Image (cartoon, rainbow, N blue to C red; front, side, top):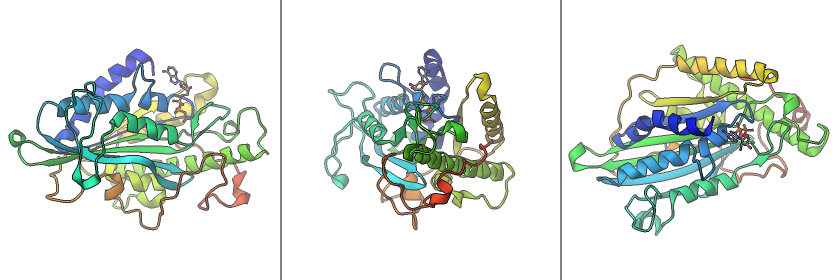
Amino acid sequence: MEAESREGVFRELESAVLSCLGGYSVCIFTYGQTGTGKTYSMEGPPEDPGIAPRALQSLFREMGTGGQHHVTLSMVEIYNEAVSAQPGVVASGKAMKSSKAPCGALTWGPDPAVGQPCCSGLQMLSLGRGNRATAATVMNQHSSRSHALVTLTLRTASPLRGPATSGTLHLVDLAGSERAWKAGTAGTSWEDRDGAQRLREARTINRSLLALGGVMTALRARRPHVPFRDSQLTRLLQPALGPGATAVLLLQISTRPEDLGETVCSLKFAERVGQVELGPARPRRAPRSGTPSSLSTDTPLTGTPCTPTPSPGSPPSPGLDSGSSSALSPPEELPS
Ligand SMILES: Nc1ncnc2c1ncn2[C@@H]1O[C@H](COP(=O)(O)OP(=O)(O)OP(=O)(O)O)[C@@H](O)[C@H]1O
């Protein structure tokens, strides 16, 4: 995505983002082949921010115009099917105007329920970004090896706007799909430990993206059973893809002739997503008490313990891909 179009894309998304303040549930997710710029589009460099910081700035600018708001931000990473909350990247507090913070800097004020947090939402985003599992692959020097889900829950009360509402914004940066031969470590052979690790990651990533494709197929066909339980990714996305939610897919594709196969797969996936109907968007009233809902609270993670995110160089965590025999088998077919 070119720099000047990134602002244009955000302008298209802004009304959906702001609808969260009216109690709507909105999910924006990036999808595409590895190395096509998903993370860049979602995060962007400080001099030209991506969708996530722009969304936060826009929301907080709007919140500064009135009403009472309670904001919860959480960041969850899925690496090799292990789910972990990013340490220190879960916060709750009342959004407040601050003379010290620039407009939209997202300062949290003291909240008796959670102690005295006072940090900037943008700082929190970059903290999570820094902790994310990345590694060099043939296709991308800083490839994200995990799916990252940022959830903002916004409970809003305004005497002028009627009953209190609870809206949610999910920002999802999916790990990229990749072919087996492209999943190895740059400059090393497949037989070495790093190469094997990259292949194992690629296999798990592709499998979870296939599960997402299965969910989209079921939603499109309005099947009574939607296989949300087929992967951690789809489990966590369930509330974001429920009735009345709004989901926006940002598709990243490569225009290189040698990537044609992957590009066609990505376009087919987008076509399928484009045919999904989640029903008319519905606002949600805030619960009378308790914590606002978010991905982490709406979806029980029973049976899926939160484990610390291993760095790509550390031994694999026990899970779906712990079998050494499967470690070097190629990733499954690309999701399409
Ligand atoms: N519009 C852009 N302008 C400048 N550099 C870009 C742009 N888009 C992507 N890049 C650069 O291309 C590289 C790959 O981008 P990025 O890591 O965002 O891809 P990705 O799709 O998230 O990959 P993966 O799925 O492997 O994590 C990065 O070095 C990034 O800085």
